[in-house]
Length: 349
Ligand code: ATP
Ligand code: MG
Ligand code: FE
Image (cartoon, rainbow, N blue to C red; front, side):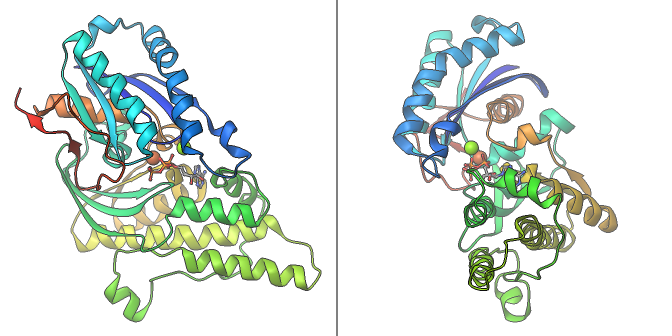
C-alpha cells in the first residue's frame, strides 16, 4: 500500500511516503533554529511552525515522490506521545486528508515508529526483535514480538533520557542546542580521559534495575568535574569531557541491550531514536553485537531523528497486517505509553 505519514510530536514537521516497505520520500521542515536561542523547544512556537509548514511539506513530499494525493491508500499520523498542541496539528491534518480522500487513518505511537522506520531501511523486522529506543524523551529496552500491536517494556530510564543527558551536558560544556550532534563531533577529536559513573550497572542496582537506565548522576558528575576545573583555573578540555561522557552513556546502553537480547533469547537488536544517530553508539553496538552473535539494525542517521517516513512505515505495516483502523475522533495523546502502538477507538475495516 501507498501510505503517507505525518509527524508533528516535537519540532520537526515530517511528511513521508512509503510504498509497502519501500521509502519514496522523507520531507522534513524543522523549527529547531527558532528554539535554539531559548535552549529548548518552546511548545507554542512549535505548534505555530507546524501549522505554517504542514501544507507546503505535504505538497513537497508528493511532488518529490511523484505521487498524487488521490493515489494514496492510507494516512498514518503520530497521535502521541509528544507536545499536545504540536500533535494536534498533525492529527487534525491527517483526519482531514483521510476524510477527503476516503482512505483509512492510523493513529500511531511515535516511539513504535522509531522502531518501525527500520523496515524501510533493512526490510521486515524479525519477530521478536529487541529494540533499544534512545531519544530526547525516552531511553527504553523494548521486547517487540510485533511492532504493529505488541510492544513490551523491559526497562527504561528512571530519570533523564539519554538525549536529555546529551543536551544538558552540552549546555555545561558551552555547546549549542540540541547538544547531541555537537558532543558527537567534539568527542571525535577528544580522548577518553575521565572515568565517569555508569549508573545502575553494579551489585544491587543491577539486580533491581536490570534493564533500567539512569543518567542524571552522570550529568551531575560531569557538572562537578567541570566546576572543579574552573575553580582550579584550568582550561576546560571540552573534547575530552565530551568523549568521556559519551563513552559512559554508550557503554551502559549497549551493555544492557546485549544482555537483554541474550537473556530473552532474541537474535536481533534494533536501535532507534535521535541518539541512535550517535557515531560512537553505532560503532560500539556493532562491536558488541558481533561478539554476541546478534544481528544489529540501525537506520541511517537521518531516519533516527524525528521524521515522517517512520510514521508512514508503521502505517504501511498496519495495512499489510490488516490491523484495525483508527476512528475519526482519534485523540492527540501527549502521554501515550510505549506499549500502546495505536490510539483512537479502533474500528474493524
Ligand atoms: P521522543 O522520541 O522521546 O519523543 P524526540 O522526538 O524529541 O523525543 P528525537 O528527535 O528522537 O527525540 O531525538 C532527539 C535527541 O537526539 C536530542 O536529545 C538530540 O540531542 C539527540 N541526538 C541527535 N543526534 C545525536 C548524536 N549524533 N549523538 C547524540 N545524541 C544525538
Ligand atoms: Mg527533534
Ligand atoms: Fe522522537
